[in-house]
Length: 93
Image (cartoon, rainbow, N blue to C red):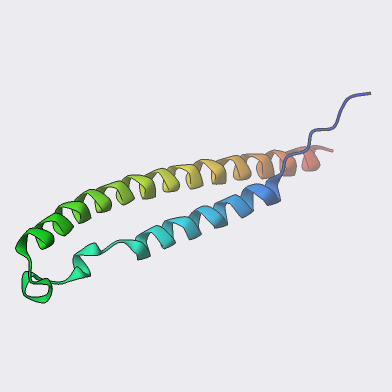
């Protein structure tokens, strides 16, 4: 007897939702430039360091967001293909 194949489509859909949540959360956490100005902080070197860090932080977040988008799209493609295959097989039966 052949083993049945189980495709965890609902789990994949949950993964898509979680990836969207991760992306949104990362986007909310950026913006260290809000630390203030030299006048607010009183130290130009500190503001320069914060700005430099913020640029690297933002670039890193953009990379992570791009990766999350790629994983989300790939996972959605898997779900779409399995659902189409399931529909096609059901129709053929």
